[in-house]
Image (tube, rainbow, N blue to C red; front, side, top):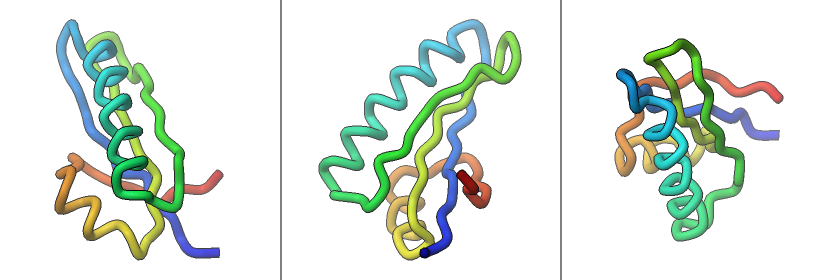
Length: 79
């Protein structure tokens, strides 16, 4: 199985969580439009004023997705 990465977008401030939730909608649309191999997305509240939205991609897709969507950071994904 190919290695997978979790691409992460950070949101800060009082609207961080609703913004992360909304961003996930756009990530799902991107997955469908570009027919990515994985359909794994999510959002999380990390602190009161910090939330993230994330998308999992195969290592072979990472550069194209990174260049198109400009995530803030990434990490290896283990399910």
